[in-house]
Length: 588
Ligand SMILES: [Zn+2]
Image (cartoon, rainbow, N blue to C red; front, side):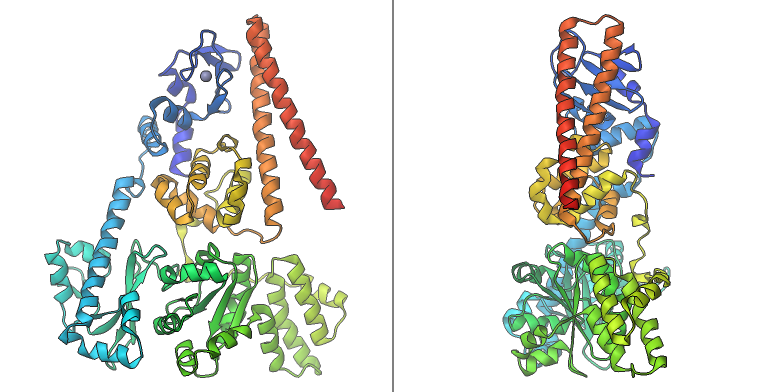
């Protein structure tokens, strides 16, 4: 359970609101004078069963958080902290706004300081070797500046001394991964020594880590920053900050493997290229890109291509909700070589992309003699598990048919075979283990399905005025929805939200959604949420009317409530009509 749910469960809305206004029990509800508008006859009701409140005079309502926020004019985080204290719930320090952002800010700053230091050394006499290396690679002065390339001295503590002079503590350097403590209590030293340095930035251009390339024969050839609170190699993409505009404009992102590949591509005008930084592409990297484009091409090494595509291709497609394409590099060459030899061959290469599943089919078929029974069985064993994994039903049917033709069986036999196959067990994704995103933090399915859709599909934002914050019963979902309305970009959203809601935000962003019928589903969810809200309101009005009638309430007030009840009824009928209309359309 999240901290927020915990707080909500441990406090009673009657106690909290009762501390601010006088409440009188009235049947199953409590009644009082609304603190938000001047009134003489109480139309403010609290519903203990739903732990909610509603004022029929000024037509506002919500839960205990929204009451405190409105009453005291504070934001969600402040209300949460105040109520947590009352409930005796301890909020983990990582959710403290100051604590989290201060540490992160410090890490961005220390990385920025190190990047500047390395960059200045590249132009110093000590950087001679690194400089001649980048010149040999053909990098221009502009490229070197754009990518902030640098050099780390061949020494044990020069960076450490420099950063200490700038006022950073050893502990901060350690957390940032810039220095190493070889053993507990042993003297620390610089992590990067005698390396060509590649600062790695996040999408907003803040330096979050480094890659270092050895300038001699020492191994390993590349050293990267370790995992830190702001750097996660399996979730970040190299040069995304420099590539995102081009990716958006061209509606295409190309993922390559290395730093050099990206830099050469950008220098030659191919700015929509990013790198997975040595490791194979991860689902989280695909998810990061998905917020900019759904059109992703993997540029794969001729040797490793087959395996990579077969292992992860469909998984990426399911995460992306779209086809992932693959381009195979000429044997023994990486993008850096290809572009340097002939820049024009790069766009030509990209014309030859294949959907990842087609590529896998070709690869499997090319090694087999499909006139023999034995190889037909082999093809079945290799291809059907992949077809089985495709979530999109139309595409699955397409590839099942392709398979049937390939091994020359009837569509029915192929279908029967497919039905007999179990989905592959989810492979252990070591690089993606993210315990805090484990299901289900999420507790309110309808709200969360709707919010996930809205967060993962920015194009839906234009329609979000059809939703009202009041439709969300969960306080944190409501906060996330409101922040979503204010923020132009997902990156800004996180900043705007209280850290206590970040876990929920991540869970919603990582939730895997079926790629089909996005816009229709969104309309359905919106209608269902509106229906739920109106039904709830109707029930609240009915409860009050029943009670007031019994106790002989004032006629004028009752008439007003009845009128409101009728209005809600009309709105509900509109929702029903829209739902029916949609059902008819779907049948037709
Ligand atoms: Zn009111």
